[in-house]
Image: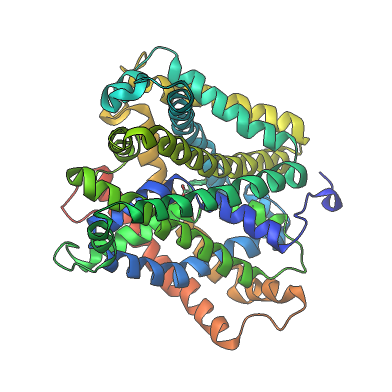
Length: 464
Ligand code: PFF
């Protein structure tokens, strides 16, 4: 692709919406509420707010500025900036979405399946397949073909948007899905607040409970790991999306808005999820992962009587939109990386990424059923890929900080922030940015890396 041909967003709002759409995903809907419940409610929420407004903004500004400065996706941005020997960071940052996307799409497929089940229940009536959510979930993920077909359907949905391009596809899809998601989330949170007994759950969620949060280090690490995943950092996405950003738009203001939107939806999700779980199934409040979304919540929906199928339908529609917009961003980061690296045109790059996603996705999709025997490190394929990527992500984030802080230099990043013609960020922010990117961020990110290694290899008792 020639330099001048590079796609671009139609404006700052489109960019912010796209980056926020990437950030707002499954992580906001189930992981944030679960971590808040586990780590003392308000204690976790406050820690998360402080971290995302400081470290989160610094890391976002860094990635967006690198992308816009280089006008390249992550695969070639580091090389383009004149430091060929740092290009391995770009390769690693490309490997991450290439490996995350296939299994993220498998989970997206589960959401498609649940949505179909609730649509049938809401419009068709009857007990439906989902009357016993535990058995439904177990049966579905181990079925011979269903998880693969669902993943392929979900992948096709995101590919259609990518084929339509940055302005006509991604921008327009976000314009429909994101406001709808927000309205549905607010409506559900309000509905939950009106249920008798909701007050106790809201209190559980918001009031700081220091006795439950364990060590402050754990809360801190939990909040930091969540922030990384939630802001789609170290996956090349913000570099690629930054490379489509106009020079006249503000990097810092955009970063603040992206963090604000992502955090707002995360906190809102807690209002949607925690009170109902506390009311109907308090034992499962700390259930991590798939169990909460695919088993506990459907059990609760089943106990809501006639409203249940409709609540399920709205809930899984919003989950689908959140997952789809995040998957679209990963797909775009992969497609752009292939285009820039191999100098291929967009269509063949999309085809290559599509084939890769379905092929590798099959390994995770069949991993609980027909290919169960393939269990690297004793884990189902999906969980293995997830653990491996959870280790690689902080590695790339730390390297990106070292690159920006010491090789490229924070002044170049800050100069890119001033290119919109304004006086740029304040002097206080400049000093804050330099200290953070050079010293604080690499150390904090290294701490998450250690904790992830401890968690995956079950070392010690302090990993989150
Ligand atoms: N940020 C998304 C979430 O919170 O669910 C998840 C995500 C998006 C992860 C994009 C990875 C990614 F590349």
